[in-house]
Image (cartoon, rainbow, N blue to C red):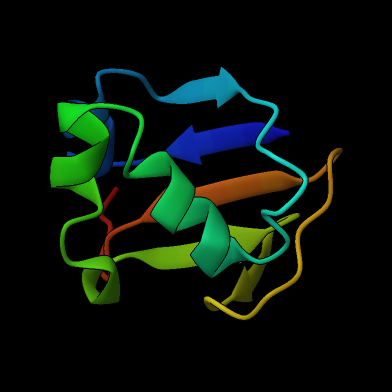
Length: 83
């Protein structure tokens, strides 16, 4: 799974992109956020207020209930991005 982080999420996590293999129990974008938040302090800080994070799966806006699969691209970004 390809994960993209934008703006302050990228700054807090320390990378703009990564390839991950989440556990099989992670089936929605919300479950992915919850799992990512356990990966370290930068992730925990970035996803502390998950309501402030927008989600896109395969370049289509989604929400915490959006299903995800192993070969998906999931992007996380703040509500307003510029430039």
